[in-house]
Image (cartoon, rainbow, N blue to C red; front, top):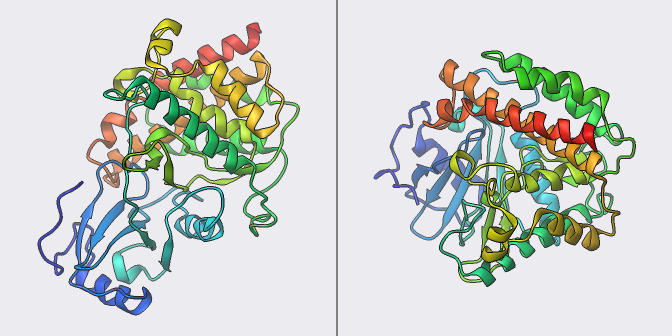
Length: 356
């Protein structure tokens, strides 16, 4: 847990007056009363997130970063709308309390939600856990993402939350544009993916609500049980192909332990000893839960290549914000330098797709 500022009159580095924020919250959040203490959570490369502490309750505030931003990025208002729609659904989320588009209150747009008690697990290998607990945690992640992709978007009022059809065509084009807008140096593997991906789009695509960044450290687990109590960080959510979303979660099996906290480099015997499912078994479990046919090796490797390319684009954006002085984390420059590795792994997946 981050350390907290000692007084409610602290001025943050981006110029926001916390006393003004406290007065606004008193007017817009039922039961809110100061004095207010605030501290930024560590991590969070995109939208800065803060712990708000009062004598009676804790809250979480999420805001847009400052400075020049890429078009359509950091859509705080979309996050707030989605979380409102998901209240009481089969997908656990924090209770959202208010949204503010008045940038004079806290420097940029923001929303406030309830603070959810629990554990954030940072490493896919789950060091320190008993084997049975690892198995249960992976099963729970599988269950929650399957529940997400089974939601009725019409019943939730989210039919207009994104476009339907041609998802990969639109996404590939969008991320190529984002990459070009934030490119800082040439990466050969990414250049090859930029050429290859538009020529190998899946013929069949379906539509569901997708999270866009569903991974272990964007989940809050119960303090003692292998149960997800909240899914975090919905900035990239939209209507899209569920296999794009699910395969992103499965990147854990392809990313290295060092730098990405993945499972890459662990062989089948090591995974079985840890009681972490093999990737193919995890995929089969998801397909059974959602009633989907299992994908071919060619399709699966396209999904992985697409997500690795998208991840490289995001890291390149972090690098650009670091160079421009607008990054929300002190580690932004280090994260940005990892784009090349994602591009290289992504091109390896593309080669496997072509060989399948």
